[in-house]
Amino acid sequence: MADAGRLPHDPGALSWTEAFHRLPTEAPPASAWPALAARLDARAARQARRRRLWWGGGVALAASLALLAVAPMLRAPVAPDAPAVASATAAPSPAVDAAVANAPAVDAPAAVTPAVSRSG
Image: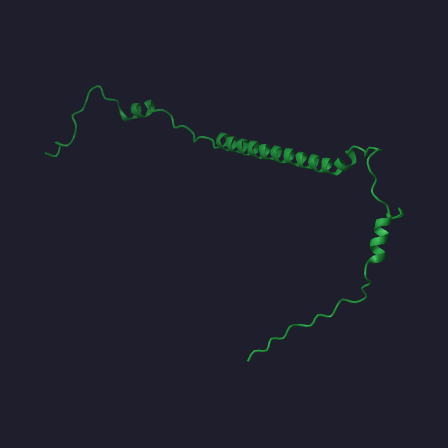
């Protein structure tokens, strides 16, 4: 029974040499460079997009600050028939002179005495 586990010899079977020659050749390991280059390109594209967004935001901020600085200069001039603001050299009206003359003179603040409660 020693030969019971062996398969009978097939006359159409290949020899070991022929079988190894028919096997496909071993493929070399795949290069990692294409995958690495794709990752690097994707990362560079994201950074460029961020840089463009930051640059655009900086330009918008600079333009708004420049407009804020120039806006007071762009205001329309005051019309000549508009009432002028009273200047310090203008003479006060007689009503103001009379009110100032009739006002009591105050040299020092009035003394206030606190109320004392006596309970007891």
